[in-house]
Image 1 (cartoon, rainbow, N blue to C red):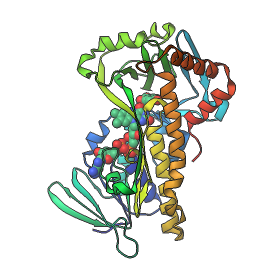
Image 2 (image 1 turned 90 degrees about the vertical axis):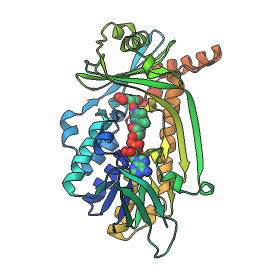
Image 3 (image 1 turned 90 degrees about the horizontal axis):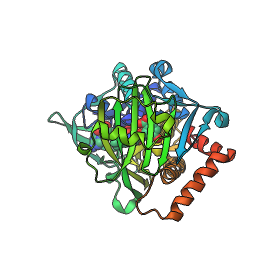
Image 4 (image 1 turned 120 degrees about the vertical axis):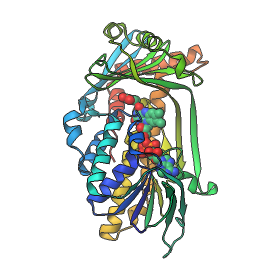
Length: 392
Ligand code: FAS
Ligand code: PHB
């Protein structure tokens, strides 16, 4: 089999890239380890930056988000007995869009099926060959799907297979540098068919730990509480979760909280991670295959989108204008924005969570950071610019 671009991974990165390339008349084959339904069953991100919303329009999948997405002009931040609002549109002229990653992925799969593009599901033993060879030797990807062996020869490979995929590992150890910070806590998240406690998100730093009140729509809420890394989700009854959430958010919101049975409940570990470079010969990494952020800044999915923007733009210049300069500088260009997203996610996590063994001085520094943010317009503008999305 031959194609122009093989995309390993059928999550949001891979599907968005495939759809954008299709719009430009560039052929791609997508390889996904799981089934479409399994991928759609993952509950993950909920907040889209303006850049991702624009990319979805460019990919011609903006119809549902235009009617079912919720623009948010700000967010609430609370600490101790204070809370205040950051106004995104005052500082940036842009809202963020609340629209679940599950729906983004669903829209992209629906669009992919309409294009008739080739997608292999249930793939196993994916291997990348000749990605680093220059000259006329073309890269190959071999794999099995439903018991049949396959080989695809291509021009380029996009590694969109997430943190546990094969793509990053296909870059020789001696050719890559990895940067990592593992946080001493996780997030216990639940989804409940209840009205959100507030019409905007609430990020709460409380003496009992971090909490986040989010949503998917007017009758589907998404909540998180910081928990120890070794907690077991089976030990968290719904009642225990709701009681813990209540005591971490301001009383005026806690009093309005409508609870109900959880329809999804899971614990996610938190880490910061970046691999450099994000390319090796004709293999290009996008999204979680190259970097991970703690979800506090809502940057995971959105930084995957900016990688896809840079790679799509580079591949289009190559195929449409015979200009490969952007391909050559993809890693440096993508990493420049990746590191800014890493910084913001680390800063939001450090400012809003209670770390084990925090000294009284550490606690005062955290409160001073939040006091400065509450009282300083420039500080609020900086948060707003990062949250709605730095320019591509
Ligand atoms: P993904 O991991 O989404 O997709 C990679 C795809 O590749 C998967 O479908 C996988 O099955 C497939 N794959 C893996 N290995 C393969 C192989 N060898 N061959 C073929 N396919 C292979 N971000 C936020 O902004 N907010 C959040 O609240 C948030 N919550 C999260 C919760 C969890 C538990 C996790 C794990 C992540 C969360 N994220 C969140 C980050 C998340 O949204 C990612 O940034 C986003 O899924 C990145 O998309 P992809 O790069 O496509 O990677
Ligand atoms: C979510 O709605 O899942 C969500 C929103 C904002 C975050 C993290 C997760 O920072």
